Length: 447
Image 1 (tube, rainbow, N blue to C red):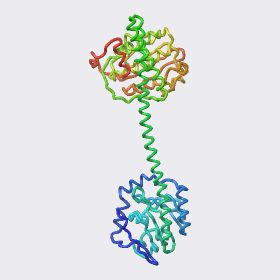
Image 2 (tube, one colour):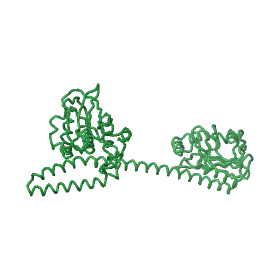
Image 3 (spheres, rainbow, N blue to C red):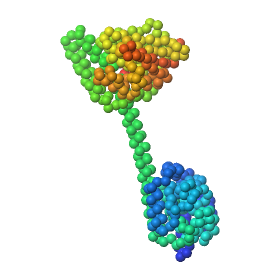
Image 4 (cartoon, rainbow, N blue to C red):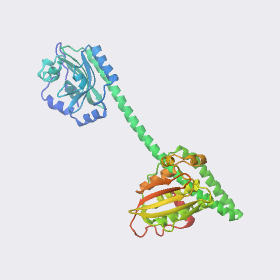
């Protein structure tokens, strides 16, 4: 839009825009410009409370120029909204908006100061409704430009004709610039805040993923450590040297994990789901096989219910992580000699997979917080070897597989964790031939 649309004609009595033929369509087009209206909406000024920052500028303009009224208007497609004003009559001062044609529309269309010494001197200006409704006889308005778009006008009006001085025009220009800078500063801060929130979100997502990966490394590391220890008992001297190196390496990695986990907060990893049809009994048997050495070392007996039933369509590695975490919790908190039972049963359209123990259990109050990120109960805090991520990861992975997880426990009466999954049709498992038995499965828990 060209800023020369209006030419200010110097005269001792009257200065106004010339060449008004066809002016109304040009004004309507400028006011309804989609690009301009987008900036108006983005300014976050419409329908907001008056603020002292802008009120003080209006008072300053009226005082320095000697005008009875001053206002900062924001022009949208249907009305003028007065973000701030000084000296406007009631009820306009309270309503703070005005429909219909106003002089501010011409300021917006011209993107340049509009100087009218006498609104009665030309039919175009005299036809503007505020000339009669507000008694406007002299008008001076300066556009408020944001991103090159005129969103409104900073204006002063008088009830009597007057010859606006060059110093008064310059004064209003500078005050309008002050308002513009304030608006631009707010928009800049808004953008900066949004970028900071986006950056924080990305950092948090990366931190959560790191925490989940680190947490799930504990189980395979523990299996490697236990296996190396068992092998070293019967190994030859040369073999024990290599096994000792393996154990030292796992201890070193565990130390790194312990250093990294407290700085991360995990919820769950949003990895792609690769569903596989598998009998629940097979899934439980594979999880038991993977955790058997860890449980034996702690003196915990793992028991698989022979009547485990149901077939599920799940991400196999993810569900092994779920069961590995649940069994690992039982091993961690149950005393030696305890039993951990794995079972699955069909209930309607669902399969309920349960991991239960006869350990210390959990109070109802603790159960309400058990799935919170980083939360640990009294026993966990006392051990000082956990991160409070296990059940959070379990819930996240189960929900990704369209399931849910619940706890059932009482203090000193053991704990049961129930994973509810949709029951799948009785088809041949796609995982046949993939799963091996024994230690060959252990590495899968970290996937």
